[in-house]
Amino acid sequence: MTESGTPGSPTASAREGDRASDEKTSTATNLAFGVDVGGSGIKGGIVDLDTGALIGERFKVLTPQPATPDAVAGGVAEVVAHFDWQGPVGITLPGVITGGIMRTAANIDKGWIGTDVYELFSKNLDGRKVSVLNDADAAGMAEDAYGAGKGVNGVVMLLTFGTGIGSAILNDGKLVPNTELGHLQVGKKEAEHQASSKVKEDKGWSYEKWTEKVSEVLKTYEALFWPRLFIVGGGISRKSAKWIPLLTNSTPVEAAALLNTAGIVGAAMAVDQGLRV
Image (tube, rainbow, N blue to C red):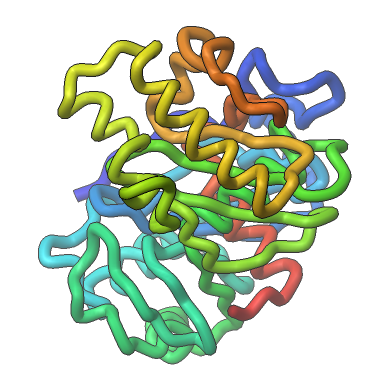
């Protein structure tokens, strides 16, 4: 079952000089392809690497249930075939990947653990070149290059607030992969067990109460990494005006700009750079 997604276009919060609208002409030549695998959908598209914009609309298929490696790889191949794309493909997965092996699996089948992701996707994509990386890492790469982190030197951290807390760290545009900072203990609990948006929802907290916890987490990350900027993503980032001003940490915090295209763009960047984790 397939459905069309929304065009990948910048939000009003994107900085001046960020990428143009996704209504691009066929004259764009610096192109790459990205696929973002999530718990509910597999979405992909062609990315103009000069601007970070999608060429036309993204395309999405539903994530198979159960989301086994072979079933998901088939979904990725369907997305790629929709565009008749013949080149290399960048792919995100919701888990840690080291040495080309999936080490964890969030929101997909546990059968992924131990899977050689390069062998799997290359087999399902006619042997073509692929890059495979964590979904938060891909989003961080995209936001750093084209979104809220564009033009910021030094350490930039992306944090996605949802069921847990996803993280990505970049230093002058270079990714430090698989940070998983949502699992860092802050006080008596893991960060994501006290400051995810799910915790806020489950406990019925106000933004004021929740941002007390988020501020504690950010202050801990500050003491460890001394970032120049935090970029916050996840669904709750769409309401950032209600809670970012309430934070009490020192480092500037900005809402993610690319929203639901960040994973696709970051995956395309990864394969263009030949990234292999």
